[in-house]
Length: 399
Ligand SMILES: Cc1ncc(COP(=O)(O)O)c(C=O)c1O
Image 1: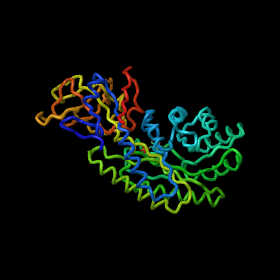
Image 2 (image 1 turned 90 degrees about the horizontal axis):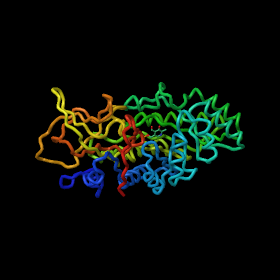
Image 3 (image 1 turned 180 degrees about the vertical axis):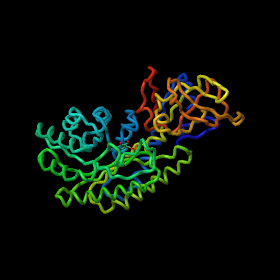
Image 4 (image 1 turned 90 degrees about the vertical axis):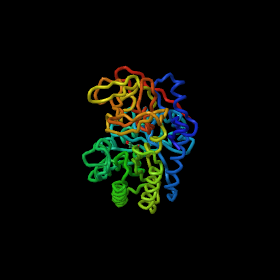
């Protein structure tokens, strides 16, 4: 059910009275997460893909690495996708076993690859021929065999913010199809230490249109066929994450219908693939389940603008500054009687990019009011930092 007003008070889930939480927290900024919302989205996603015999969900930990959130994913049967040795350690500390873990990312160091080999994870998603060779050499030195998947760049143009496309030819991610002969040569050079498990891709994030993903899956299948002909049949295809949420709307049904469309498209594209189908969803599972709460410190009126200056900002939620993202912002106590005003909601950081929303019509605000920045469960706390030496926000879990 996510966010709703009950008698003028904003609730997250059925029981998360956000005003009460902020009063108890003395107005300090905090993220609040609703585990029930995560569960219901996880179940909807699995249901939408229910026609696939051999599906594995690898939750993209980078979206939200809160320990309780991770334990929750494990308890629901999810596996995990990590992009650093730090994330791998976090996953292993919070209930995941090594065979639940796949390791993506373009810049894996010698230490990180050694740690993945030693832990015995399920697969490393390889992003360059140089990385494949490095894994081969390190596994050989240990007398071990490492399972790898080749991350391909399918050269498609998804409809999303340019900073979150990852499957276009200009992006650093994945490998061009023309790399295949070189990759095959390296695989043949290390027959004992490199085992090709499959192919992988991730074309971008916050996708509300699925056409580019469908096209990319078809390209991946064609590369899969090419490898089979070359004597390297795969046992898994990993199509990455990317399904978006409707940040601009409180109508959660729009998210659910996108999940259904995604399931139908993936099933249609991969029903006849007889290996394991893997997905790496992040945002679609946790984005709606979190809010960032803050307090108004000052209302500053200039001849041009009215600023609501709050005690959180780009250091706690980077998405507006980084991707021009629009998060809905709601008062924790709704007043029908209050007049509507237009605000720029800004934070304490000494940067002009430190805004949470611009030109927002809102009920009249005053010093001390509490606000919720909505749909902040994904890429919120996980990107937070203490720039200007501010403290990190707390994280509070509703179960
Ligand atoms: C390799 C990889 N997989 C999965 C994801 C998760 O993406 P999303 O949160 O859009 O589902 C990302 C996000 O950037 C990624 O880089």
